[in-house]
Length: 61
Image 1: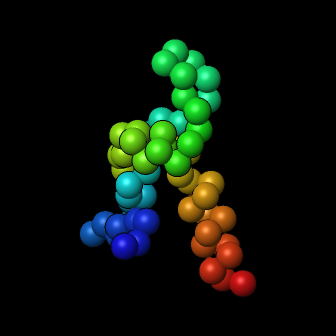
Image 2: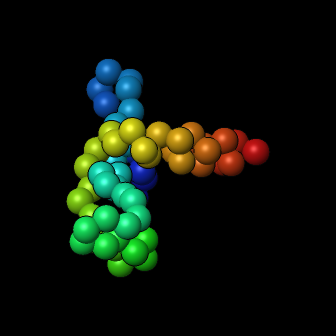
Image 3: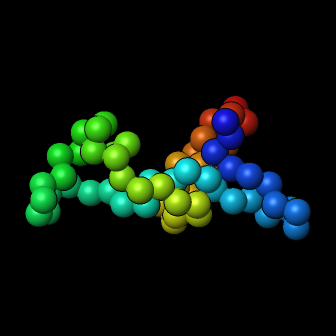
């Protein structure tokens, strides 16, 4: 499954992005794999842009 979808107008939609992430807080967020996979997902979350670009650069090497 690709981390993006190409739209009819040529733009990309980043898909299945973690919409929240962090440590601490109340209730405590431990940063574990289980914590991150239990968070809501959404399209085009800004936090996914950097990792997507870095992945594209790695593929282009």
